[in-house]
Image 1 (cartoon, rainbow, N blue to C red):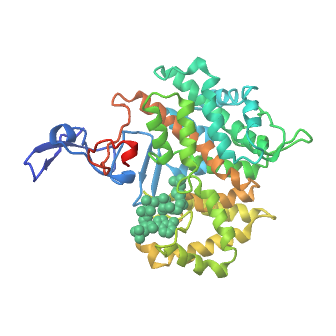
Image 2: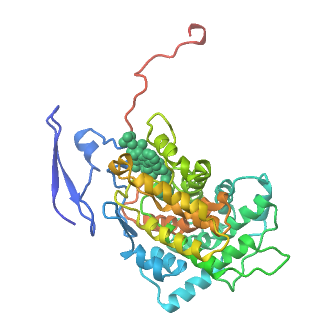
Image 3: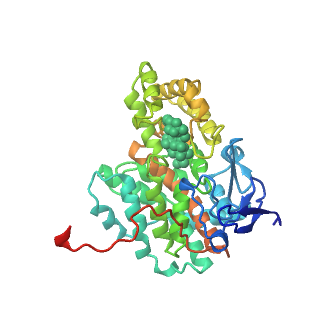
Length: 431
Ligand code: CMC
């Protein structure tokens, strides 16, 4: 750790303090403002955390200006090309790529945790038939703490690990069951002879009436999308999981809060919103009209799948997905090419428009992921659920890292109070 400091002087009262400057492995320097209030009597103000780090983390590194994304030091491009999703999950959870034996053991554990408690089925039945699968996910995942009393001691590292295994294993089963409930088909049990992604497709699309063989092209595409979505450092949902967990809430409750945060259209819900938007645009002839709407400060419409808080050059995940969209759609006869063509047209117009160039707004991962999911016959309401399955790995890795961090304290931001100054209670008959 560096012994560099920054001197801060309050010009109005002359108070002065030295604040430590930290440096991570790479990335900009970070000023530790922890003693600002005790020494200077002031708080910082940074809505949306534009310049605020909330923790130390060794899981994922992003350089938004250069479009870099690394998991535990490995570039996303290499992982996307070579790895299996559970291999990446192991890497994110434990910090190193697994050996052959370690991966086999990990796969065995995850596979053998994928069944749900039978009583959990009653929860699904409690939801209205047309409930959005994300609503079901928030409720069902939150309810899991009522089932696993054997591993709820958040101060016990082994309990934390078991919870992480359970969540990674059960999310595809819960997700597929949410979908089956939605379409009125019987829930499909997991199959231990299939790998993680193929098993998910099986639980989504199999019925008791006939044999289902997962398509290897679809399985490969899901594997890739899951890897790309597995973690993204301190994004809104991960920060939500960390904040919920900072009170030592149980991991299932924390995860339910992460799923709720992910659902928003500014975050993971954008993949569903992109397809809604493309449907609304309908035809390349309407692109200019919608670009004008997106640029109008008085119109709430935004180009969904465009822009990112951190990436100001390109989103490396979008670059990978765009290429796969081309390959996948070319290889599928009944694919959704008109939607992809429209997306490409929209991208082309936006990227040459001064408004988007000036604000460094590029297509993000969600601009293309929905197009791939649709080509795989995954319904729109399941797009964000797919994101949630993959991000469960990141959420659990961050939760475990946080619970192990000696600096961990309950998260408790401060505020600028803008309400009334002190005033006296007015009796009812005098108001
Ligand atoms: N369409 C039109 N204008 C936009 C867009 C957009 N998609 N995104 C940002 N802007 C404008 C915004 O109006 C603002 O303009 P001005 O400076 O004139 O006020 C400027 O660009 C900066 O935007 P911001 O809202 O301050 O940026 P932010 O970092 O707070 O928000 C964002 C980032 C991703 C929420 C936002 O770009 C957005 O709403 N994008 C559409 C939703 C989306 O695709 N979300 C998925 C994000 S990637 C996956 C994930 O993280 O889950």
